[in-house]
Length: 498
Image (cartoon, rainbow, N blue to C red; front, side, top):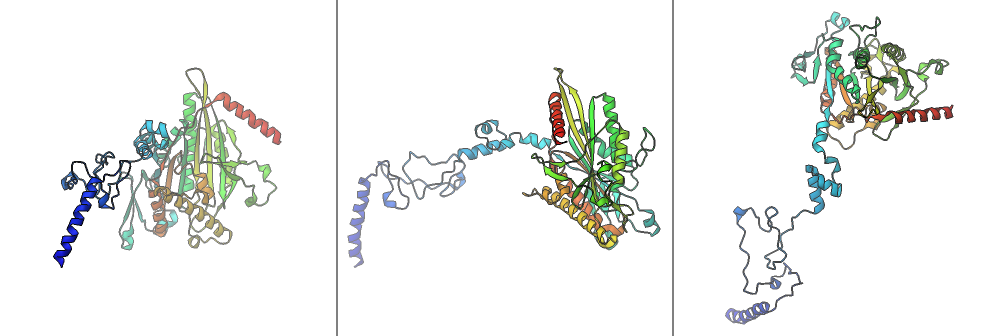
């Protein structure tokens, strides 16, 4: 019975195969890989493609590189068609643009920000982080408080001695480390003087100190002012030394310049002007009710403070008097951790305009700005003994400093969202953290073993801030005639408002 069935099926199969040899599909029809009976054959007989050689790098059903793309003119297919891996033209242009091809960007505009990718990387600069450890206070020495921080200025290392608690020590490396015996002038010469030089070259620069309360931030930034005309005391801080440095350079260059300053305070998320004339607030009995200013965006990634008074200055003495006047108006309080604890953040800004003459006797104005920021210290409410109003102040301070830490973390981790807008402090510092300014951070710590936890937090954030990369850009020089027109427009606007 089986033999009879095979005898019937065999001639049928042979006749079907011969019919397929005679029927040739038209050239416009595409062969279907699912039906073997419709696969077109060559006129001189069917020869299947040889199996791929494993040593050639071609996998079954695929191609190796770009040299094995299918040939559309060939009509002999075996199995499913191989994928067409030639990239699309727009994807090629994107890759070329990322590699720095100028022609592809001119054609399509894709990746235009990466044309000068290498130049952008060369322009980038890490935030400079300097650490300063204050000495033990007289009270701490009398109480025989142990020192839990060791500084190595040569190796630029700070070691937290956790071995006192039978734990492993932690070591942090910074750009510069200043131990308890460091002097004010050494800190300025090594960390801040280069920043001031960049300001006079037309950059926007920022120097700010942060750390726990009672670690010497205000002393580092302000210190003592002038004792005699033309001389700075050894305890003078960053602000008076920067002022003296700027005037010394401008006078040595015999430059034609103009200068103005502003001084603001950020208290409980409210901005006030520390240089506002007294007649605006003399009728107010409470200092906490001083007029507040609004913070707005300038549309260029920066911020503008509406109503902030700008005072034109002509000598270092004028700036010293304004600094002293504004510092006395800052809010301070006596706590268990600091006898004169700052309850607010302050920003002192110096705007410098220097006239530059070009080859064609065209007068241009070179602009630079220096921001000197003194942040209030974070504190433990339980240890500081703050109550009621002071406790609310400490809560607002810790909140803004916590936002600053989150911004640092987001910038270091290349996060998609950076929470600048969560606090007015970070909005003010937006250009300085990840923006177009040059920034120097002075982190201050105490060696006291009682503040070990706060010291570790400060060191950790300072160490992370080292990885923040800014893109400093020189401010565009402005033609003197254009600047004069802008000044006349402002004067007319002020007259109309009056």
